Length: 171
Image (cartoon, rainbow, N blue to C red; front, side, top):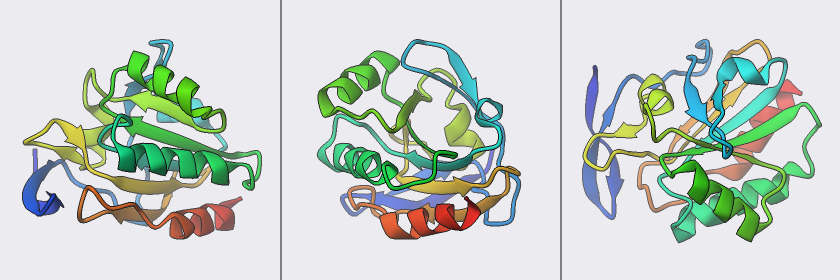
């Protein structure tokens, strides 16, 4: 598996990402994650939908929580066929608790803790921490990636508007 040293930092310290990150124009790699009810979910479960897939290190951190809440708020203005998936290594139970406490009812939280399938397929698994690097992938209904953002410093927020604009062009 490809290792990309120094691809991101955490509080200034360089980290290594595992796997290859797809680029705009690539077909979105398949992955298998768990829903809050422990049901296996894959990319194919979201057919014919525009997807904003945001990978976050942990919903139990302030930046990740703020990011997921921001996407939940922004989801109200998106077309019905657009879905926002928040993927982390958090356990499904912790994700469900967070979503309930945050009132996050317009996003879908998914856990990659079991196999790190998403993290390795999308090249955002942090080797040293076994967390996902903060990143966003916008995927069209034809499963072509139209937008990718890897946030260089894991404690920084992503460019929300760039992701939302990319998704709106696909809807």
